[in-house]
Image (tube, rainbow, N blue to C red; front, side, top):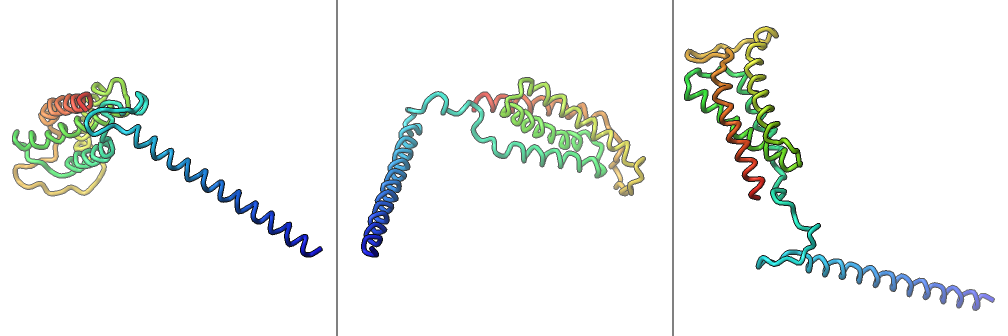
Length: 185
């Protein structure tokens, strides 16, 4: 009786092992087929492509990894500039307004890559809103009771509408550049 049970167990063990081997072989074949189809569906380096239309990247959607991070960094720099007294000559204001060109570029690129329909208009409105907000922050800082920094001679922390007027063309140019890069890419 023990021999019969032992033989039956051995047979079932062998059957299980064969079944496991068969499953492993099927998984291996599936992986090999997946790799082969992936290789054949990738575009060739000479410009030809066997990829289906659904697999082709949408124009302008290529390298969108860091647009949001750069956008956040630029907004941080612009807002922190409001806390520091600035020189009031036109050249210094123009240099500070160049940050709005960078803001317009990254904001437009961010919106275009996410499929926002009115990205250009939203970029202009958002950028001008930020410029006016920064100048309004300069008015509110003394009223909030925050400690005032002593401004060196030739600098001020008072709001300056010339700064907003200089930021607007930079914002427009940056938004246009973001749209151009998106449509070209």
